[in-house]
Every structure is written in structure tokens, then in C-alpha cells.
Image 1 (tube, helix red, strand yellow):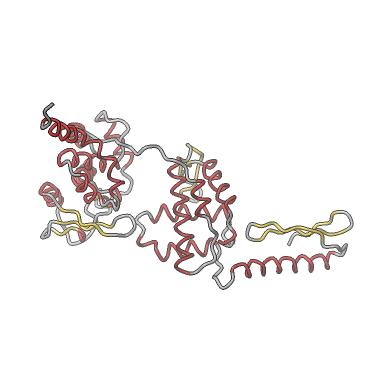
Image 2: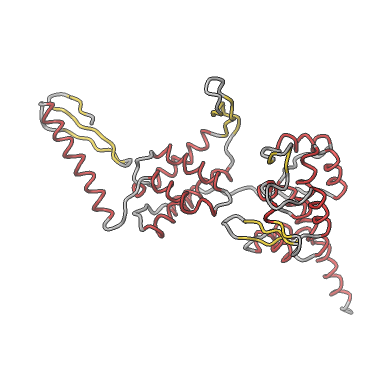
Length: 355
């Protein structure tokens, strides 16, 4: 409790679920002032309970932990979701009741994320653990938007699945969500792709080539297990974002690549010195530099696969299925690579017209 004297009487001040309460106790006796403050605190809490009606009240930490425990295994981006929700709890307070979050809280959290920026992980020589170091850059609009999306998903799930008393934050999140820059359209030509493969470290040749042949995301590629590979059906089963499964057909080059690695009943397909490949970024960037390729990421291998497919088939619906996109609008970013076929089609129509 917070009791302090100002003038003749003691004053009280406390915060409950983000709302401040303050006033005069109308007494100069500390003991009576403490009793008065305790009663005010109890009334404030009872008011919160009555506002909720028959709905369940949960703290931010309890709601977010339950969300991760319930849906976490089906989230392909579990670690990113957990990190975002942990940041939200740290900012709002673990014991803050979920339904007391306001639009102003959401706005201030977004400002906090941008001010905090991106930090570099460093090794603490005392504890021998990774700790957050200095700020190395701004947090991008897309990253802030992902934080908002994860928060909205957790809050809405608590509302619909557990009948938890939650705030109406959808409008606030929509206001704070910023327009992102156009999606990347970086891809390689065949010559550039094989130049990159030639410069790769030995342990990355297999997974990079595999990504170019299948368009799989980095996580699906590096976490691929032999139990997901069916040579008889010539199929690979992967889990997409959202937990849905996708069947990926194996072309003959993919089959040859996997056979060369040496199939087993289970275990990671791609290894480095007998261990899973966990952090390929440094080695991948070094290979790009040696190959003279700039502004290229692992995810751009997926863009390269999709671009090649639309260029060689002209069928955007096939690209949608190959990438596992739910909506064709997501795939339409690759449609511009099919402009020559469109121009040829216009020409065929014009050729049949006699003026």
C-alpha cells in the first residue's frame, strides 16, 4: 500500500490493472488511513469483478501461457509468438488483468517496441548465458505488425475458447498497424543459382539445392525428418504455418538428392558433423559474397523457386499449391513474371482482327 501525508491528512495512491486510484483518507491517523486505503482497494477490485459479469477474469501472463500451451504445438512460428507475448507481458505486467488493456496501452506498447529496437545477443562471461546487448537497429514496421497480430490472436482466442473477459482491442490494433513496404521480388537466374551452390560450404549444398527444387521455407527444410519422406509415394509431408499439412511431390532430382544423402528411418535429413543445422545465416551470406550475389536471403530461395515455376508453366494456380498458400492473392506477387505470356496472348487476339 502507498500512504503518504500531505498537509493535515494522509493520502492514498495505488494502481490496479493499469488504472490509478488516489485521494484523501480524511484522517491524520496512519492506522485509520491504512484501513481506508485497504477498503478503497477492495472496492476497486470488486468493481473490476462486476464489470466482467459471469465471464472469466485472467491476467495477461495466465492467458498468454495458456494460449501457448493450447495452440503452441500447432503454430509453426511458436518461438516468435512466445517472444512477442512475453514482451507484451513484460510491458503490461504479468498480473495485469487482460480486460483492462486499453487503446492507449496498445499505442504505448508499439512506441516502446520501436524505441527498444533490435538488440544484439551477447554472451555473459559470468553466467555463460546469452543476454540482450546494445541496440543495433530499428524494429521494422512488419515486425511491429507481427507483434500486434500475435497479441490479437491470443486475446481473441481467450475470448472465444475460454469465455475470458477481454478488451476490444481489434480497432486499436488496426489503427496501430502500419502499411508495410512492397514484398521482396528478389530471385536468382539459373546461372546465379548454380554459382551460389558452387560457393556453399559442404553442409549447405544439400539444403540449399533442396530449397531451390521444392520452394520449402528454411524451417521446413532444416527441420525435415526422414519420417516425413515417402519414397514409394514420392511425397514429403510438411507442416505449414497454422498447423496444416502439405504434400510436396518429389521430382526425380529431389529423389536423387535425398538418396545421395543416405535415407534412414528417422532423424534429421540435413546434418552438419552429425548434428542438425541450426544457424546457417553466416555461412550462407559468406557464400553469397563469394558468388557476387547481393541482397539475397535464404527465403529468397523460395521466391526463386516460385518465379521459375511461373516462368516455365505460366500457371499461377500451380505456384499457389506448390507454396501452400491459402489465398491466391498471396501468390499474385509472382504474376509479373508471366508478362511475356500475357503479351503473346494479346498478340494472338490482335492477329485475328482485320481492320
